[in-house]
Amino acid sequence: MRQTTNMRKSAFAAIALLLAVAATPTLAQTREFPSKKAALSVETLATGLKQPWSVEVLSDGGYLVSEKGGTLRLVRNHTVSTPISGVPEVATNGQGGLLDIALAPDFATSRILYFTYSARGDGGIGTAVGKARLSDDATKLEGATRIFLMNRLTTRGQHFGSRIAIAKDGSLFFGIGDRGEGERAQDMRDHAGAILHINPDGSPHADNPFNGSADGLSEIWSKGHRNPQGLAIDPKDDTLLSVEHGARGGDEINLPLPGRNYGWPLVSYGRHYSGAEFEFGASAEGYEQPLYYWDPSIAPGAIAVYRGAMFPEWDGNLIVAALKYQLVARLERDESGAVVSEERLFDGELGRIRDVVVAPDGALLLLTDAEDGALLRISRSAVTD
Image (cartoon, rainbow, N blue to C red):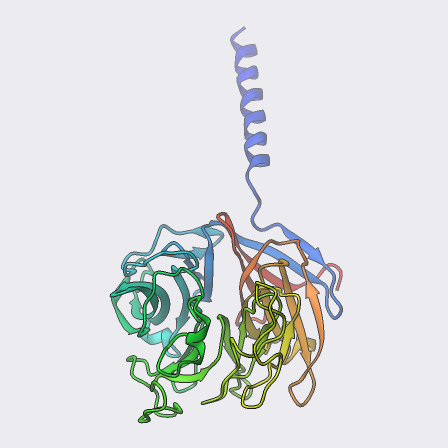
């Protein structure tokens, strides 16, 4: 009888173990997808991220991920860490929160990183830039300090921007949206609706078009942007590119140049949410045309320029994460830099895509925008390629 009971216990234990294994997701499991130039493999590196916004790759193989609610986490070996301490207070409101993170060019030795977030001040909240050192054991931010806060705050909860692109000299480009008040994008004395350019200490960069001028704020690089949530610098030629949300249509890729005006809210493709046309239509003298636009909108979340070894056939392509249609857009360019074709990858298959990054090995890293968000790795498929 005792032997029978033990056998039953062993059988029940085995069944329980099998059920537990079946119920536990295998993060290393991959999915295969076709594309025009290479078959793709999608691997889930981590799940359980709460509205992740930005990812950076650390040299030791870990991934630093920001969560919109105000937490910063480390992903390593498919495991998500407890929150990294030392993040300053974040004023979460609507689209605001802890947003982009970017590693300093000398991060390998300095451990310095930058981050954008919504901060509280007189009159409401606005986009801020912070700077800190990641501790050697990656458990806390040390000496976190705010180096920039936009000049006009509001209680509105939309259009904070705010990707960071770091230039070779260590200076920071970043975008701020119009904060839901479109006319601010045309006010040269307002940080809203602009691409800005600052030094690592937060001071205006010497190359800025209004530096020392009464015609505009010294931090401003370009104006007339609605909500630039993607920003990247092409490592081949240092070209700055932005991707930004339009209204009903008019999502744009732009080439922000110093002192130029990109039109919002006077010039745009698509229409206002009300259905009304834009005051000057889709083009007008004195306002720059986009490199590329989408109508209907795809709700772009981030942009990267592909310069990697894994997909040599993608060299120079623009890779855009999209929220609305849950896709990644791969845009081919000709020798002049003009976009000549678009391929839509993973259409509706992976969820809303918030961030896209080219990893050091040439793979793509994606973040899905969800309460149970995921970090995904896109590589060349060894099975079907």
